[in-house]
Image 1 (tube, rainbow, N blue to C red):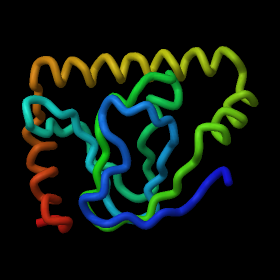
Image 2 (image 1 turned 45 degrees about the horizontal axis):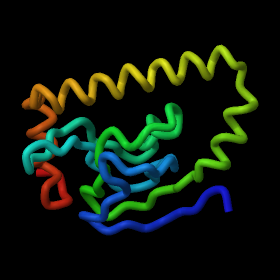
Image 3 (image 1 turned 180 degrees about the vertical axis):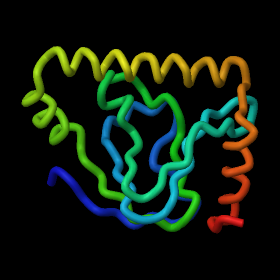
Image 4 (image 1 turned 30 degrees about the vertical axis):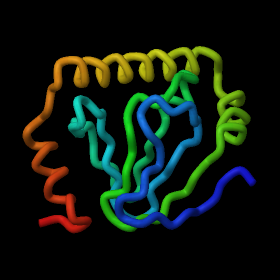
Length: 137
């Protein structure tokens, strides 16, 4: 099966930073927190809402997960497996793949700068706390 719709509960983890999984996740309902882990602290990267996706960097560049993804609410998420995505990617022009992989590398480098320097955007940190109990405050 190339894709499957999975129901997750608040607090369920899609993947951990450093993991070697390559699937892509499309959020159908709910909210997913993306964060880097540093000294026991979660450094917020993004909140992913319905209609958005997560997990693209590892698919595009083949490297381990650059961050962790955890459901901030109950969620329904469509999972596209790596084999399906690879078949679709082969249909694209080679120059486009080079561009996508370059963008993925730049995003991964930025994630590492965030972690190394413990950079935390206060607005995103506030948004993360708003979703701490699974509901915006």
